[in-house]
Length: 420
Image (cartoon, rainbow, N blue to C red; front, side, top):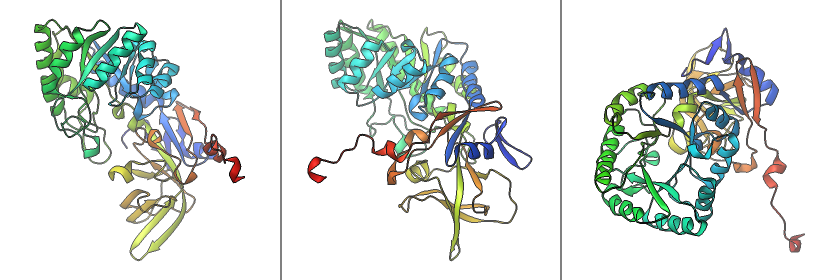
């Protein structure tokens, strides 16, 4: 188990003080559940690790965007890292003050940039020369000065999968570090641009702190050059991406990250921003699913469950590992099992060749470490309604997103009169 708030009590699997079987009875399967205590504890790990320097912990909302999850983190004093206008509206509704919101993203539209300006977000992380020009024009039109940082691509390779690496020239994100200086110099001459920050993000599921140190050194070199030219950077945003334990890996902790980077930051006068997402919420969450059928095909054992790749895409997208445990302990010999869903795709699986005890039909399984990029990446493929989300707090639970109905999927669709 990767969370102290998820454990067996006797033969029953609990989240905090609530048995998952009870939740399944109340809300049906499949569903997501999150431990509030786990999220609060992990935010506290960051806050304690970086307490010695001015800092802001900005939750990467894309990891788990439910309003209630955002409210938990905003009440702790956290900020929000967003990547769309929809996320901006979402975090403001969740209770994040605009002064603690940073807007990232390589393809912001004019409408999104205008919304960010009108909302007075803390920083807009600009990712290209053309975006900087568009933002400048919008700021002039609206008469609102834009507080900006430039996202630097520092040419640092990190992340466990090519699809989640973001810090090298092969990736679409940011401005290559060798090209960044002229953009700052131009921004300094513009009345409606206020270049006060510098930012990078080098990848996701980063298990070791070494790449952060290398990226930080690149950023600090740029900051010192900018200071010499009269551009006074106040905020250094090192991004997010610290990994979590999905299988047998042992990722570095926020404390280890702080020990590695604070010697470089302490005494500079810079405010340090961090953008954790996965490491705040992944281990808080489980996907609970029910066994529909079992079958054998030669030597293979298939366990067909009611959750699918549209509910949890990570295994299909990245061949990602998620531990799967029975909600009620079972006995028997372990055998290789494919845990698969009902979606009409061969890539619809939650586990392949997993050594586990064969569950009974109609029993419940919990897919662990599913709080990040689980529901937020889910879809309605095969016209499957998206599933509920539940927040557990001590002995209580709250349904924080209801299960969709099929009518919800078709809302907004019309049949032209000529086809009626």
